[in-house]
Image 1 (cartoon, rainbow, N blue to C red):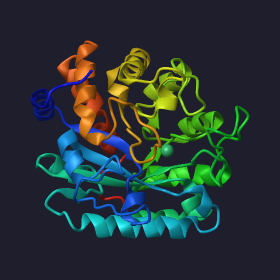
Image 2 (image 1 turned 90 degrees about the vertical axis):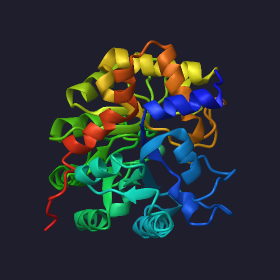
Image 3 (image 1 turned 120 degrees about the vertical axis):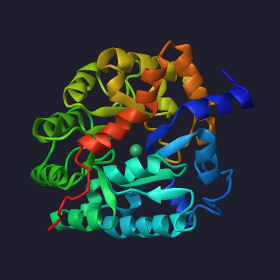
Image 4 (image 1 turned 180 degrees about the horizontal axis):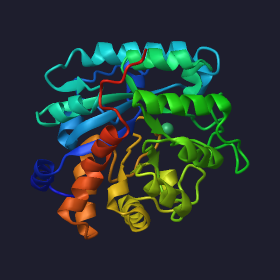
Length: 336
Ligand SMILES: [Zn+2]
């Protein structure tokens, strides 16, 4: 399903995209060879020129703590990535603005600029101390993926097997504090029991920023229909990812990804799905979506599946926009 440049421009003019997950900040450190966010790069999936080509208007940048920095050193690594992020985006104030609350997002979304949220992927960064959540908030972090694949101080991880532990007492404290601060809670990567435990206690909608549907591709990182129904009850949003192993074990392509969109919409309604590309966090990509600049192909694909314009707008942008508001990321939340 390849489309011409003219068609690309047309869908870009009509739709805005909110991508709930990428791991591009690891390129900002310079550790992965020469990379410049302000220019087009071959080795990464995301940079400023290609975000623009792809029609992205809001991007969540996750600070991914690699396993080699866990458990000791997770916070230091997180702060190192945070510094690399701020040093990088300082160079393009006319193009990308870090946003800290709903009003910021609203303001930036009315301009040509891209709004960027900072998340941390992996609660190890808190090193078991709730005070460090406050510190990360003060440094601009507005969302936290409670776990990565493995168990940590907060909860069990998705790859820990079906009997993996749920939310621990420190995890409960973190969820309650995030509710209070108005931080977005990300349940991608958490164990099934952890997922259910968080939904029982959170008083704001949560997100699962990058996962797909288990009914179509049985993978521990994907959500079952029951989980999706519960996410709908919570008024949360699932960002569907572009990672081939989450899409199909045999024939992962754009067409099969669109099946996941249709299935998730069928279970939850179009109000509860969005995009969480996982670009620069994945080692393989779909042939049709090799980097962020090709996102218009997904839009054309959704049109081809019969989604109406208003529905596509919700999926691409408005649902996550609403989460920012609903999760209490509205500013005015006092840390102390
Ligand atoms: Zn991830």
